[in-house]
Length: 618
Image 1 (spheres, rainbow, N blue to C red):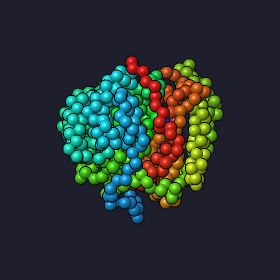
Image 2: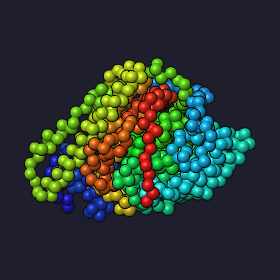
Image 3: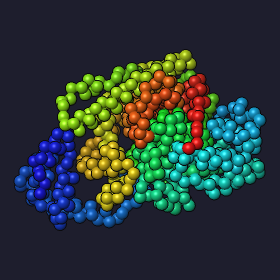
């Protein structure tokens, strides 16, 4: 039998007791090898969970509980594949919300001077050119898609040993596509700005004929016999897929079954995740652009770490068909590029309904490079820009002494907090300079604040959904095959998620709806909101589905605080001399055209995107 008293004491101390009834009940039945749940099991579970159940009701519960347990086992036998979505659909559109649905021809910028100049003798000089610049050179046949593809393939092979960003080179497919693109362009069949441009896919996008590994041990040889919708659309646009790029195992971090994907600005650091490979390869000039995904920071974080321009589109703008599911109510696919307009060119191709992903809205994205961004209403998160150092520092000093092992852990936590605080303090000057630059540009920045809600508690939905998406891993013990097994990694998260009651998942969804209403009211007054990339806005806007553009905002100097350690797999190993800082612009739901136009204006006024890492092959 379970040691009820000690277990209840431990769980109560962790604030978990009220959530444990269902998990404890089923766990008891399994642990005792019982074929049926008994009244004594109900008593034990209710006591542990601090759920009062009167004696006369326990007998009444038995038949229903045992029937449900049989049902769970029957569902397990279905071996539901990751590609099957739930019957419930998250919809970020609130009553009365309006967005554009009519598509119009895209209006791109005039070709840059570098794209109209003579072709360089060494194609390597174009490695860091924007997709817009490359598109002009390919369109006018001053460079061939084949030559460009071969150049990027060489760079992928050259720098992968140091950066570890490639899962699979799609070389045969790429060369065939490039030759086809050249033939079509020569015949006058130009498909648009991405025609002939080499790109990389985060390896959670299914690609027929090539493995799709999800970055995870146990899935190294997985083949999915279809192309994801995004892959199909880029094929139709004439883009050339050169590589399946890394992601942290099952879309967490930058640790995958082949190692740690590195930051091109400092190869002793991971590139962050989970769109680790797309950001690293794009920043290293090894693809023209890439596709990543975000559930809770997986485009934002690696774009920041690697100095890329990333777009997390509105939830329901880009179909996820053929992409690994982590959280059906939060997953989004988006481009990671070198410029804001590059993101627009890619979004134009990949957005819109495909008849399969039921969350996709009939929203249109109409890019206009000449849009007058000066007419947009712009806010900034005043308190986030003025945030003081972590007040928990003082509280941490008051912790009572413990065992030597506990004291060592506390010292390590303290070291990490101090490093994060020092980095945040140092980075404030980049945020302050950004606000000053925007005002110099003539932007009237109006203070804005996000409403106060228990947002972290709403992330329960992501935790439960991700555990459901990979429940068979947990139940079979195959989660041991995943490379990283730290307390914050998926195996531990999936196990703990089994203690989340269905009622609490629904309550989190209801709280999320309240937050959606409140955040929508904030955006009633603004077209764009400027925000520090770090902070609560990341959680808030991922929950509400609002879009974000993350762009480089300068390089840290030689006086920047150094990371607390040199472990590339440790997320805290970030920042330091010579690494990029970033800035985030938030937009209205399906307001990407305005959002990108404004972000592009800032990017061109600052030029931080023109800085590139100095690479050394392994």
